Length: 534
Image (cartoon, rainbow, N blue to C red; front, side, top):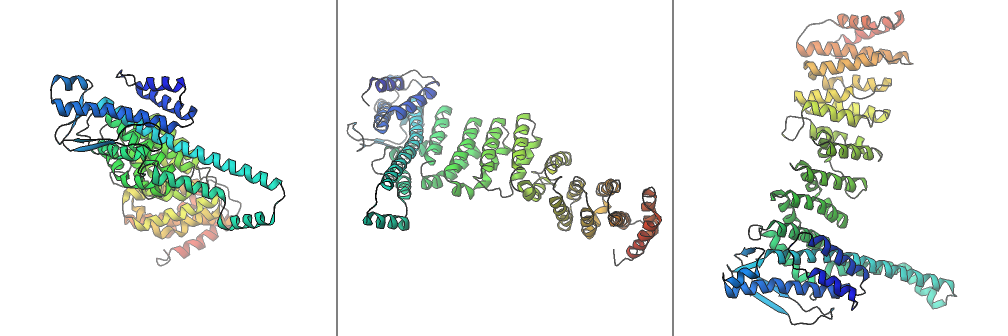
C-alpha cells in the first residue's frame, strides 16, 4: 500500500474544490483502492479518519470562536446547526497501521455547527466503503472456497489413508468446509462490520442515522441525499441493522419532498430486498407505494426495480399486481412501455397472470379513489386477457370465477366491469358457454343494467356466429340466449313469454338451424318456462 499510485489517489480525495463532481471521482478512487490494494481497509481507514478531523476542526473552531470571523472562514460552504448535543468519536482501529490517539469531542447543545460540505464528503465515503467491504468479504469467501476445492481435488488424486477416509465421512455428516466458510463470513458481516468494538463503520453508523433522522437540523439538500444513500448502503450489511432502521427509511420515503431522495430510496429498497429477501417479504407492500408517486423518475425507478425482483423470483406477488397494471395507463409512454414489457415477460412464467387476474380486477374495479375509470379498466383488461385467450382451460375457469364474483358485489360499476371481462374471453367450445349457463343465477340480477345486458348479448351473438362441430353446442347457445332474454325481462320488470324469447332465438338462427333442432329447442323452451327452474 506504499505505492505512489495510492499516494496520488489520496491526494485526489483531498482536493478542496467544492464541486459536486468530487463524488463520482471519489467513488472511482475508492473502487481503485479496493481493486489494487492488498490491504485496502487500512488505507480507507486513514482516509476516513483524516476527513473526520476536518469535520471536527470546523466544530472546534465554531465552539471556541462563536460567530467570529475565524468561524466563518472555517465554514465557507455553509453551516448546519443542531440543538442536540452530539458526540463524535474517532476510534483507534486495531487492524490498521495508522496511528493516532482516540479523539472524543463533546459538542455543547445549541452550539453544534458543522460544515455541510465536509460532512457530506465524510458520509459519502462511509457509505461507499460499506459497500466495498461487502464486496471484499464476498471475494474472500469465493477465494477461500476455491482454495478449499483445489485442496480437496489434490487430496483425492493421491492415495487416501484410513484416518483420512474416516475424517471425510465425519465431514459429510457434520457439513462441508464450504458451509463453515460461508457461516464465518456471514458472521463477520452481521456482527463485526457494524457492531464490532474495533470496527470503524460501527462508530460512524449512529452519525449517519442521526443526520437522516433530523432533516430540519441538517437541511442541506446534498447532505441529505448522501446521508440517506449512506444509510441504505449500511442497511445492506446487517439484517439486524436493516430491520432496526427500515421504518426510518420508509418514513423518509413518504415524507421527503425531494424526488432525488425518493428515487434513490426506491432503488435502494431493491438492493435491500436482494440482500434480505425474507425481511422485505414481510414489508413487500411498501415496495409498491412509489408507483403512485407524482414524480415520473421515482415511478420509473420503482417500476424497473419491481420488474427485476418479480421476474427473478426475489419477491412473491401477493395481490399487488394491480399497481403494476395501473402503469399501463400512465401518462408517460416510457412507464407504459416498461409495464407492457413486465407483463409480457411475466406471461412466460407458469400461470402467473392467470393466478393474479382476480386480484388485479379487484384492485382496479370499483368506485374507490385508488381504482381506475371504466375506460382505462377496459383497455388494461384487453391487454391482459390477450395472454390467456389461447388457453382454453384457463379461460373456462376464469368464466366461472367471474360469474361467481356477481354474488359478492352489488356495485353496478363492478357488474359492468365483470361483464366486460367476460366478453374478452374466447368461447371456443360447448364447455365455455355451459359455464355461462350454469352461472346464470349469479348474474341474473345484474341484467337490469343496460351495459351488462349488452355485453352478455354480444357474447351470445359472437358465439352463434361460430361453427360448432357438435349439435349439442348449438343447443347450449340457444339455452343461454333464452335465459338471457327472460332474465332481462324479469330484472327490468317487463313481461315476456318464454315463447317470445324462443322466437327471438329462432329468428336469429333460421339460416343454420334445421327443423329437428327447432323441435329440440322448443322442448328446452318448455323446460325453462317454469319459474322454479329459472
